[in-house]
Image (cartoon, rainbow, N blue to C red; front, side, top):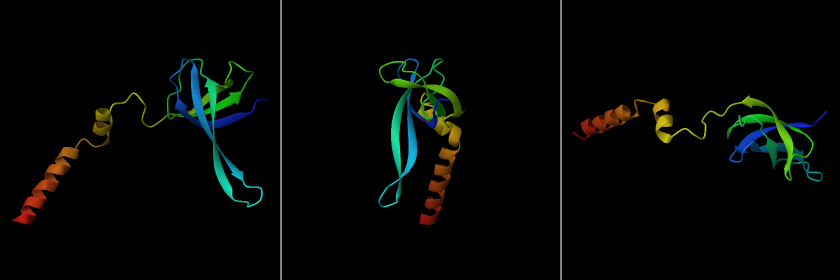
Length: 114
């Protein structure tokens, strides 16, 4: 059975390829302190379905290219904000009444000054 790992997609700019960052916890052999190590793996994404920020599971396979030894098995969780969203779309989705809040705040400061 192939070894599988869970990580976060950090790049998907190349065709049918994603770069997955996998964090593992290790213990120092002498000092016994635990620390996190991060490794990046290139994985094959046949349908180009993973986006940056998605949490995915990748599995080891035979070498597919000079640097690809993994393939995308499953997308566990989609990213909350995708890379193709604009700043305006994000701010409108978060709080549509931001301008009203600023106007209310300015009006109260003017009343306090009087």
